[in-house]
Length: 145
Length: 113
Image 1 (cartoon, each protein chain N blue to C red):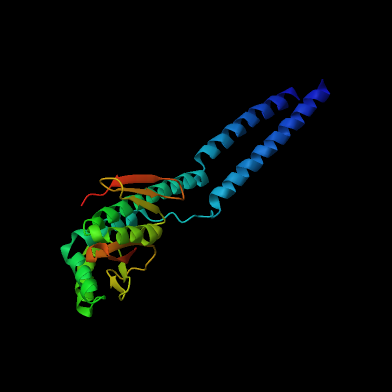
Image 2 (cartoon, rainbow over the protein chains, first blue to last red):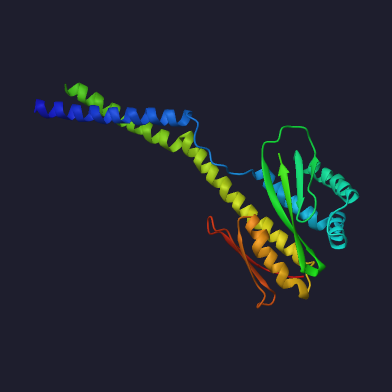
């Protein structure tokens, strides 16, 4: 009987050591930097939805890009300036730091809204149909936070 | 000996409770759950944004440019969003099916001018 109790004590001692090891590893795992996966930015996604709407619903933006690309095949400096001014206002409203616009087959431009360091970027491509859809152009709009 | 055994038993039950408590409230597990929630939300947002782009750009498409526009949507736009898009013009109105290959999330909607 005393031998059995001693055996039980040893088994429980082992189990306790195991628990202690688990607790220690949990504490270390909680404190140690984890392998963080990129999850994206929800605020930028919301801003992306609004900027996409701006490209279609704001007649000035849509017509400037559409007419410029349809008539010349690219955007002139004046058109880019007026687009930049318009996008600056949207950027200010959406609380983003910078907006990059890459137009397929035309020059790219950036609109700086604030001087804060750029930390996150999300891209929202927009398709602009020209000539009734016969020649569509992809416009890549990147928002920076 | 008996007292020591009882003490160890009580201690082991207490430790087991602590382990279970830690495992359910571990910052590591909480962080993982949050990340997966945000990822799912972003994937869903991407589908909504792609749908928005497709429906709005379709308004400027006429009969002659439909095929080219559909090809641009399937080849360039949807790929840029990490999605797969299929436009079925045999249906009236035309139906678009968007699928996210990373998680199987999908959406289908009709195109109206």
